[in-house]
Amino acid sequence: MKQSLRKECFCAHCRSPRKLRYHRRLQGSHFLQIFVMTFVLSAALYPWLDFKGVVSFFLIWPAFDLTYKTMYRKDLKCPYCGFDPTWYKKDVTVARRQVEDFLKQNPDSPVLQRARKLEDFQNSQTNLN
Ligand SMILES: [Zn+2]
Image 1 (cartoon, helix red, strand yellow):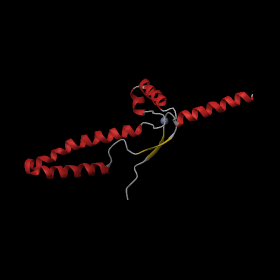
Image 2 (cartoon, rainbow, N blue to C red):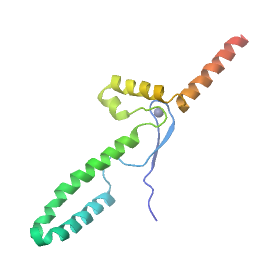
Image 3 (spheres, rainbow, N blue to C red):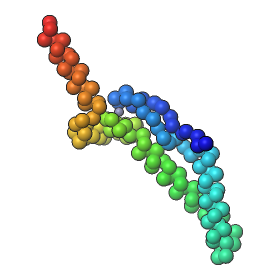
Image 4 (spheres, protein in one colour):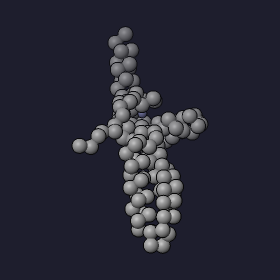
């Protein structure tokens, strides 16, 4: 049975519920995968490199880590409003521009639909008074 790695949270910008598939750092099972890959690569390269193929661990590990962090960052971006917390930490204006661009490109986004409903409700309340 595969263990679910999903983490539930809310978007910091639009407060939509989210599920993250990836963790911030590599987990124990990932290191096991890296060791298996190192073993297989070392076994394949044994006729030419003998046991020096074990050094491939130090090539596989950063490549695996970089790939995993790229997937994590891609997963972190909110699919409803386009908010990226990583960019928000680095540069707020860039993060704000990304959200604005995302909402311009996706006019049917649930965030905009919610804002329109709220605006309609507020207009109906002011018309009643
Ligand atoms: Zn969001």
